[in-house]
Amino acid sequence: MPSMSRTDAIQKFLVSTAGQMSMPAAVRHRWHLDDGGAVDVIDLGFGVLTVPAGQARHLLSDLLSQAEHAEFVKSLSDDPDLATT
Image 1 (tube, rainbow, N blue to C red):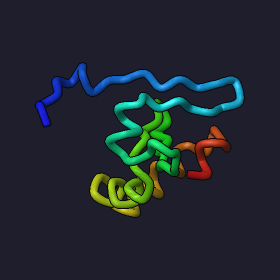
Image 2 (tube, rainbow, N blue to C red; image 1 turned 180 degrees about the horizontal axis):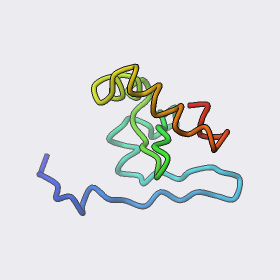
Image 3 (cartoon, rainbow, N blue to C red; image 1 turned 120 degrees about the horizontal axis):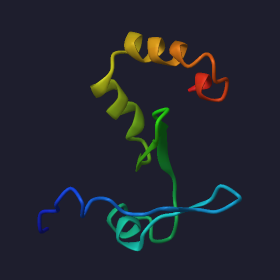
């Protein structure tokens, strides 16, 4: 596979008024989602990160300790929607 520049990795995902997201065809093909399927979405507070299903917990554990994650969630207490992650 040819190497991608940082800007090549940025793609638009459309979100409908019902909250549904449209993933670009190249991404669906690479993630074997041509017929649909699940993905993990990590709410970072300032944006969301979409990763292949089953990868979010592994990714978070590599990036943050459980205590650091708990502290981060606690810091979101002023936003009840975010504080449940």
